[in-house]
Image 1: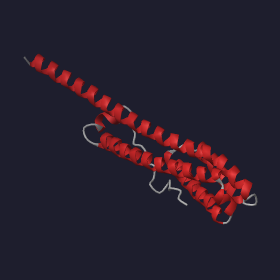
Image 2 (image 1 turned 180 degrees about the horizontal axis):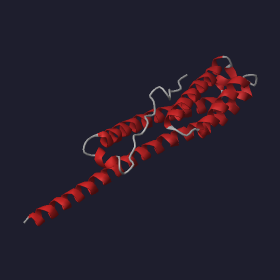
Image 3 (image 1 turned 90 degrees about the vertical axis):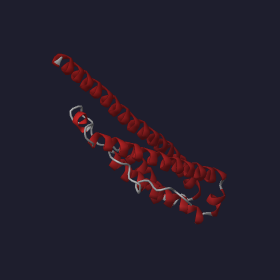
Image 4 (image 1 turned 120 degrees about the horizontal axis):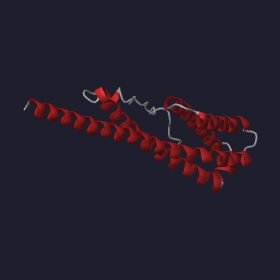
Length: 178
């Protein structure tokens, strides 16, 4: 009888470990998928930067400092490694893009350019999608981090190498509005 109880307990423990491990894997994969959504939006924005810079340059060629700052931030953002570093650089890129878009007030021809207006609309749409993706990512990270830190899941999370994820800071990516 004691052997049956021990066998049942071992089976229950093995089942618990398998179910919990699979839940942790699903949670980690949700974090990765949410980050991929952010990465897609960031890449879409990075793809617009050269077009926007070219358009602005055609109308305001002597604004080299603003154009160079945007181009440099784009390159740094694409080379960043950590989520926190990426958030900081993307925030700087957003600020530089806002300054670049603000040049339209100084250059009426630029403001009237259909190409510039379309790029501006595209950028605003990307920023909106980026904010939504960031919100989803941070919520998924919060749930994942909570799960791997709570008892009894923490007993499996640590030995199997599940580590907390960084949030993509709310102030890191500010919407470009002009």
